[in-house]
Image (cartoon, rainbow, N blue to C red; front, side, top):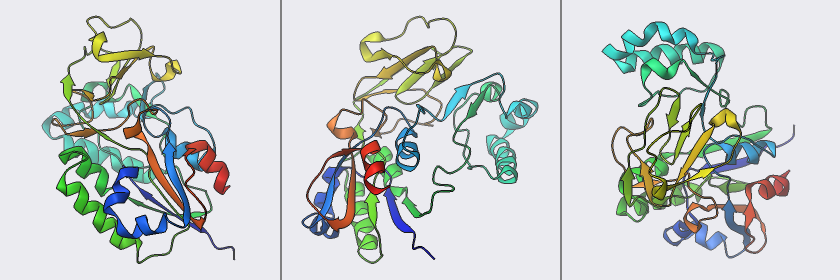
Length: 282
């Protein structure tokens, strides 16, 4: 039986966090490692890592053929208790073998208009042993990238990594600290992510264009897509319940957005894109 490579993913681990991680810092002295450039948006990075390419910009998109149309009949249930709405949705996801998720702040009366291409785990069917740690992401969102809570979590992860076997350790994106919250217009056909405001149909009015940039992408994800400037977070949005201190999903060329990787093989520092890393270990 062929031994599967052990891939460990540390959600939101930035290259600068190596300074808090004694074990990983020691390993960088002999093993190939470097910064990792991920694509714009959300989910595309790990999709590229596992499959070589991706057109994903975000989790949700607008479609007339939503697999969640039936949820329209349970909006009243959600208005009584959103948790019950999410439980019903995820019972369906379990039955279909899909990824579980929460609806967060998505307006319930609009939920049935959307769908996702991230129904199955991205590593499903790939012959690797994939282990992911997501606590750091939530901590950095809540407390900021330079908080003592982040330092403590990095040290905790470093201690775990020192005790297990691995072929590669990587992260999926970086994170930067939020400086400003900006409100964007809400329309009938829109999805407001934390760093992306996406609209289908007519161009939205009263966009704070000094706080964001209009970008081009597959219109599946929006006819008008606005990317927040670094440090700007769109709020209210369809993900966060309250204001947070750290965010990702900005221009991937930014230093703060870089992810990290290290291979369990002798080598030097070598910065890569996610696509190059895919080819490196293929």
